[in-house]
Structure formats: structure tokens, C-alpha cells
Length: 255
Image 1: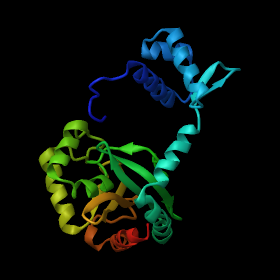
Image 2: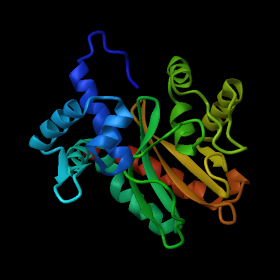
Image 3: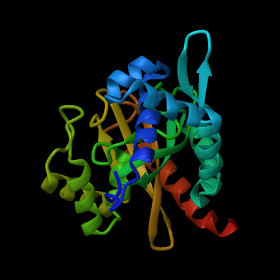
């Protein structure tokens, strides 16, 4: 999360908690939310009614359940479309997926985690648990390390302090010193790798996207270990990936 608010508005916090619970459940009755949030039934109902009035929640009269509306998608889509890196990179993500045959992601950092802006599947792409808007830890992903490698040391330390280095698989880097060494290697070779660190059987290669001196995101190729070789520098996907990242960086002048 971001910085702690000095004077948080409790009513807003309660509404946001309800939104988060609805997102977790998909849809839920008032009684379910009351139990989960330890709030009174009438208070939960008032929050839901307000959210429904403004179009953020939909009520199913037959099942007496509530769910989030697509208004969040409208807002998210508008926010994404205004990102310069998305405007430039989105068509290149599709081109790279077609050329490589694998799964390609465009990711940016927000609040210390990687957020997926877009994805494209090539002919042989595997299905992963990723979708536009989902967030993942940075230390266990190639795109995360590609971004972290070019952030100030103080910012990297802040992200580690904020989110920790949780173990996702047996190969995940969970030591601060080991991660910093890996970031040094990433800067030296110009791309980052994920060797089954987020998902067993999957490897990923990522290149940073830099506009002037700022690293504003990363583009990655993911595939099974049978198709992405761990002899990274000789990997056929590295040249494709780095060329596309370079084109995206040059195309920034068109937006």
C-alpha cells in the first residue's frame, strides 16, 4: 500500500473494504460481507446502496447478491490508454507474440509491484494466471527484476521493506543480498530472467523499457522450460526481445 493517510476518512475506508471483498468473492450477500468485515448489516447495506446508486455495484434482485460493475473496467481502461508506454508498446506486444509464438506481457511498476498493462499470446503460448491489471511481486519475475535493476537503490530497498521477498517456488530469490547481485547481473547483460522463480516449469526473459533516463516498464516473453533455454545469452528470444524494447523506446517520440 501507499503512504499511511494522516487523517483517513473511515467511511471511505469501509466502502473500499467492501469493494475489495466483492472483488475477492465475485458476488456476495450482505450477510457474507457482514461476517467478513465485522460490520453491522445496516451499515453494509448503506455502503452497498451508495455504491449501487453511483454505478459501481450491481444488485441481483433474485439471488440478493451484489457484485462489482464494469464501471471499474471503464475507469481502468481509460487510465491505461493514457499511459504513453501503452500507446507505443501495445502493437509491439502483439508483434512479438506472433514472432516468438510465446506469451508476451507489458508491465509497469506501481506501489512496488508489477502491474500488467497488456498481454498477447503467440501460436504456442501457454496459459498463465495473468490478466490485464493483475499484480505480482517484482523479485520473483523477470519483468520485475528488469525494472528493479534500473531503479535507485533507495527505491529498491523501500520496495523490499514494503513487500518483502516471499518464496513463490523453491527457486525464488528470498535474500536481499542475492537479489541485489542478480540485479547487478541484469544490468550487465541488458535483460532479466526468471528461471522457474514464479512458476515451476516456466522461464521468462524481460527487457526494460526506458524513456530518456526513466525506466517506465518492461516487456517479457514467457514459455515452458522445454522451449526457453537457460543458456540465456544464446537464447533465440533475447535478440527479438531487446530489438522490440529498443523500437518501443525510439517510438516514444511519436506520442
